[in-house]
Amino acid sequence: MHTQFLFGRYTYPLQGEGARPRVMGILNVTPDSFADGGQYQSLEYAVSHAEQMILEGVDIIDVGGESTRPGAPAVPLEQELQRVMPVLYTLRDCGKPISVDTYKPQLMREAVIAGVDMINDINGFRAPGAIEAVRDSDCALCIMHMQSTPAAMQLRPDYADVVAEVIAFLRERVDALTAAGIDPRRLCIDPGLGFGKTVEHNYALLKAGGRLVAELGLPLLAGLSRKSMIGAVTGKPVEQRLAGSIAGALAAVAHGAAIVRVHDVAETVDALKVWRAAH
Ligand code: 7PJ
View 1 (cartoon, rainbow, N blue to C red):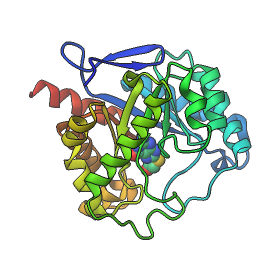
View 2 (cartoon, rainbow, N blue to C red):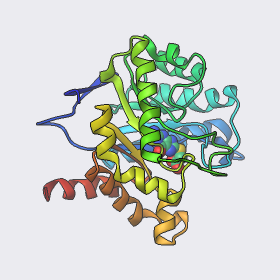
View 3 (cartoon, rainbow, N blue to C red):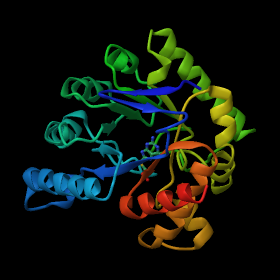
């Protein structure tokens, strides 16, 4: 493992003094929910949500303009640009690192120009042009594993050995990115919990966090906030998954995650503070 994670305008120590788990707060920008106010209202809402997360102690703000929930339809590029870019330009100087959750190379290029600190790609930079879009920037890159596509991924998740296959996939992507000349200190890995996986696959991968870190030598990001793997164990619908999601975030950190991607920032920050004090 490298000693530093290069994160755009920021640098995170990965070992020793100053190394601690980071909380990535999810900022969804989906103007569809603002039938009357349209785009401006959506921007205002996104910015006030970001301000709230900053007050709550967020480390990284992850801006996403396309729902990648199972079965969700793809959003056209133009619409994703219109949703996300004003938010990126508005938040760029908010004092916290900004990540953008996208798999579209054209949006990656625009986000790099806007000065974001991380590109978070659920598709692992597999789209033609994705690597070229980020290569000459200094932003961090999150390489996530996904089987199939968001529209079809939960239909029939299929693995002979889920942990070995996810590791092999991530290794291939890390090799492709570094072969293009990208500094490995910019990379982190993510097993993609919920992306083409059954509940059993998700927990196997969560428990294998330490193995992923050991075999790939890169920081691990885990996202399980409010996901069906929490609902499957608690029997709770999505709006009642807070406690389960916090337990999941702590478990991810116990298994080696350097970053947890969450909806509920204040609660996760508190839980991690107590967790660290108790170590
Ligand atoms: C993840 C993500 C995740 C990373 C989403 C949701 C679905 N990016 N984007 N990891 N999940 N890196 O939040 O329920 O697990 S969207």
